[in-house]
Length: 332
Image (cartoon, rainbow, N blue to C red):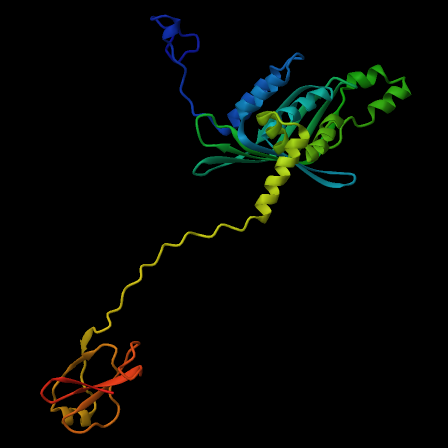
């Protein structure tokens, strides 16, 4: 039977470089697989630069890592920022771990505008310990990851809630020390606390102090100031933010409109007496004038007019009389 292009052993007549890989969509779980491969490529000579490059490849610049678990003295919750994440992973291996990888089962993905959330209720963090004795530790819990929805697809938030853990010792080691009670007693003791080594727990406790000091460290690295000067500057800026009043929203200046003093408008006398007296005619009077409410002699309609400018006798109010011929006559 002849080979087909779908055969894995198929050889292209155009040479081996003509064959192309099948395109695939990168899934969030595949990023965890890549992270496991990168952790396996770690060597004993991996320094801080290697761990910084590791964190840069898989974590955003503003990423946070949170661990929640319960110890003998109560529940614990530690959150560290991006600058402390590389050191966290390195402390895992400093505690005697030779291998570290994560297993995600039945995870759920939800897509948002700019992020992808992965919720895995059956996550296992597997660590292989070479000292103080050969032990495999399986730490189980819930892992919630938030990835940025872009080409890099880096982790923005990491939240691992530990529920339980198991420490597995090979039967071969138990058989070798079956006749030694002291070794068996040592093998029966746990080498971790909730799946975390003492190196990692001590570092998380230290991060409670280090996390608020990130501003001081960043200022010292940027401006090359002494620790005392960095502390003074940070405290002064914080005091300024506390004392400074909140910024008021900018208001648009209101344009004032000038009022016409002698603007005219058409008015009509609604009362029956005024209609009879004025002969049914409508007159134009100043807009600031008020309607006449009292009876006036026939042929003369008196309209009080109050002005801010005093009259000839110093009075503020005077009246304007309208004659039947339509002429205005001012009365004081």
